[in-house]
Image (cartoon, rainbow, N blue to C red):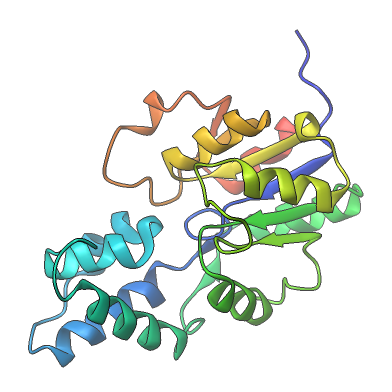
Length: 219
């Protein structure tokens, strides 16, 4: 059976559209230094990046949001991150070409992320993408973030596209769950961070790509 024509493409931000791990990990390591600890290797922190402050603070300090002191650590971490949000962050290799090709084909694209808008908007501006994206939905743009499908449905509406005609690309299992709940086709970005839980082959995505350019034949 042929798949429906793709009329809109939505991307997760961290680990899918852009490699934000260097700046997020850098903020975590600056926080560790402030607390008298040594830096952790980038490769240790990278898999935790898609989980944001919760994941990185867990990796860096061994605490969870339920633990005493977590809120203070999270606040300071986010302050440090906001002060250097796009120093080393870059689009993944090939992603710039993907976005250009989508625009040339008049296929609107957008971002749905669990990142708060106070970080998403400045980062998208720094990357030169804020005016190009047809929709930018942050974690606090909707009542419940991913894996709830509300953000994806809002983004599809802003694109002017039926959810069934959209593809959502993400590097975390919650992205695939959100796409399925929204009624969108899902694509696992296996070049991303992929989290630390189940292997991505078990997520049940419609497609898996190992390089951004592999998305183009799916359109």
